[in-house]
Length: 151
Image (cartoon, rainbow, N blue to C red; front, top):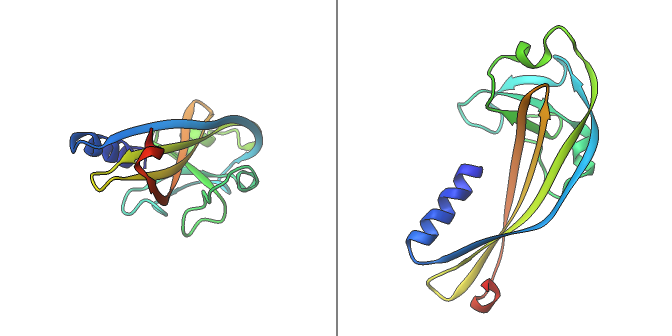
């Protein structure tokens, strides 16, 4: 998702649109995470044909604005690109740990050629769990606004 949003911003800039990203809020919450085969999974749910190591964090639903539960998952989740091996995350030490999650809410605006201001709300969630960066992004396109709102 991050790559997609970056691509949109680059394309908009290339086509002459003015794009800007503003951070609305950043906060950190500490949540319990079950680091075991029950909640650390290798799946392609939400990622097409790409299988990723993901961690399911039920308590995350209470802390986020957007739905971070991918289709087919039993809880909100984050994925890592740092490994494709479940044992690298779980090891021989399964258990529940308290993990700090960074939750960022951003507003991305782009001045369009037709004189409107397009707005996308993005929520980014990330956490380092046993040395691996886990992350998840959601976005929502908001109604267009007048061009002056892009300033």
